[in-house]
Length: 164
Image (tube, rainbow, N blue to C red):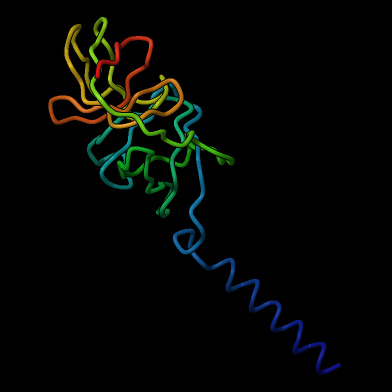
């Protein structure tokens, strides 16, 4: 009987300790922007902090830590900041195709949005003007990773012409 009590007491301590471990000590998890069309990433955990960037619904982020209703997250392009837990939902599975090898240059066939990631769900970084030349860094699905004017991002393959 004494041994059973000891085992039960030990199990209770383990459960209590597990409940007290903050989310920051748990494994990183994937979350998706939901509940709003455009979610603000802030420089600190609260609405009083300045906005660092904005991300569209469907954008997937990796949670690095948690504090009082806010997740500190990292996006696919490496941007880190705080997002409200009220607009993020757990997700799983692959979040982006592997980047393929590609090189050379590309010319914009029209004004093209450069985005933070390889989909229309990612925030626009800039507009590349018609005829401007970009350096190709890689390819992910139907999107090229490019660099122009010191900025790196993704453009859709149908809106550019690849030149060697």
